[in-house]
Amino acid sequence: MFEPNTTTCLLGPSGCGKTTILRIIAGWSDRLPGRSGLAIKM
Image (cartoon, rainbow, N blue to C red; front, side, top):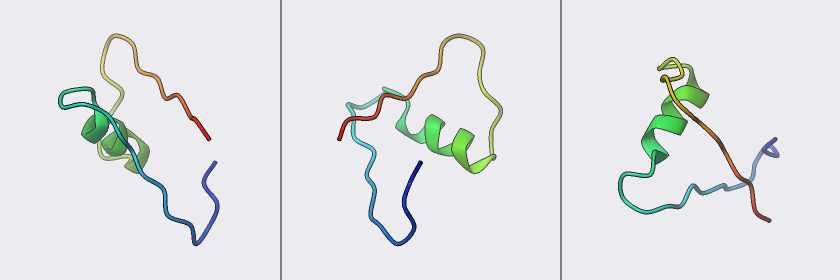
């Protein structure tokens, strides 16, 4: 999904789940009940 040696950013308003999605991607947290999603814009 992400190319090696590139910079990627995660943007969104306060409380939208940026930290939560990073923890899930890193494997530090299990997915929480409810809906989780990731929309990619290029």
